[in-house]
Image (cartoon, rainbow, N blue to C red; front, side, top):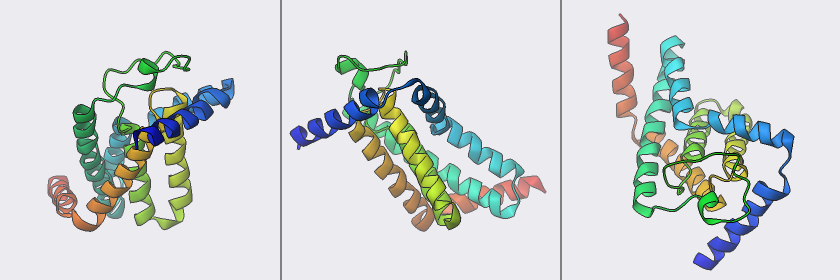
Length: 187
């Protein structure tokens, strides 16, 4: 299994970090990657909660709970597995001057973006294509920028999707509780 993952990571990191590298993608990947992080996702959720109508507010709370839920597991995996980032273990990788302090597996940005994309797609199916394509762009940007191995991104995508489904279908009580508290405070 390790040999397969090594070949998988090596093959795709060569494609996304080396072969397709160009000045146009440098800009797109650098800016798009920041939109997919937990902080940006949280800001988007809070904006929906503060400025949305009743339906959008509930949706914002669902996004927020799903992101917090998914990032809880991201941090457990990162701290338990302690996988170094590609630019720390591979030679001749394009790093773009990014130096991160935490571990690589799984990708938190990818987890957050796929979590959001799944919640968006469940609630607003007409946005499925846009949401999933944007999540893929964020995942690819993490490999392109040399901060994640492809298997980190794949694991992050799976964790984001699973977390979103769990929150949407089995873990609605915190969403409802937050929504009710906010509604009482707002009056």
